[in-house]
Amino acid sequence: MSVLSLALGLAHAGHAGQFRHDGVTPYVTHPIRVGQMLFRLPPFYQATAVIHDLMEDNKAITPEVLLASGLPPVVVAAAGYLTRDDGEIYAHFIERIIGDKDGLGYTEGQRIAAMVKVVDIMDNLMDGTRAPTMVRRYVNALKLLIQSFPEIETNLAQCPRPDGKGSLLSLWSVIS
Image (cartoon, rainbow, N blue to C red; front, side, top):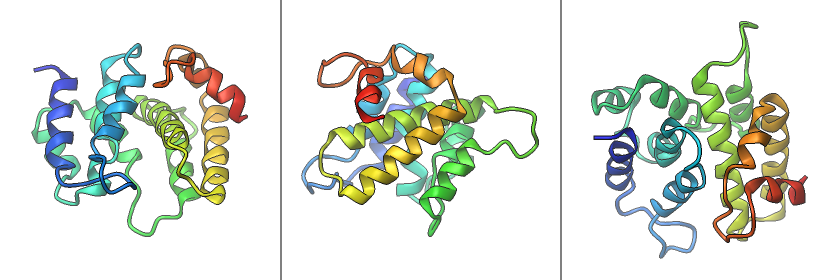
């Protein structure tokens, strides 16, 4: 079974009964859409996108559960960076993704997490339901992530917008 197929199965099971803000749309459509926007990048990016909210939204899902399911350690590590701890301040969460505490550079898990987070934020902004304070918070996070990981802009050029209006890089040009 491919890493993406495995991640999709876990996402469908783990998000069962959860809904988007409208109370109607199944929640799993969001991580799947984020994964679809990353289809031109390596499969680990897509798999991470599909499970990016799983540990946060379903406390029964832990890194150990994901590893035991057969997901590669780098995907589990990236998902760990994307899991906000209970009560964690959003700015601290973003800093945790971009942190380079030992000065040795970023891990592959951090690079995947940063790219997935950028696309996640863009997807959330495109749904048009965010309050102005949330939009500002998201734009600030995008700036920090893209500044910290310059390859993200190159990757965004490969990621199509779900509305068919160019790439996510064109959306970033409008936002920034």
